[in-house]
Amino acid sequence: MNLKKQHIGIPTNDIVHFLPFWENGVKFFTIEGPNKEKVEFSQYL
Image (cartoon, rainbow, N blue to C red; front, side):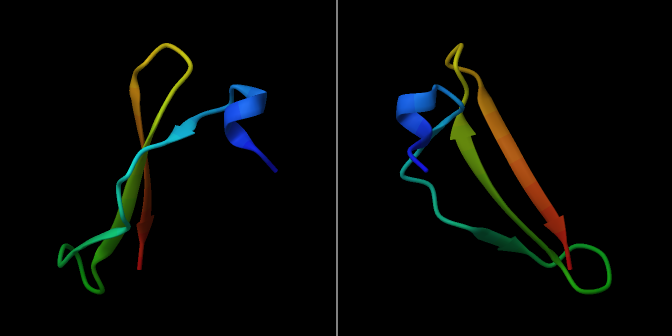
């Protein structure tokens, strides 16, 4: 699936980050939305 063609979100050059919050930590990354906003996706581990 090509996100850029479908205007769903444009991946940035960001990588998946890890932070040692909560019991097992959290991973997150960001994309650029259709209105140039930053959208962050997070996963509690």
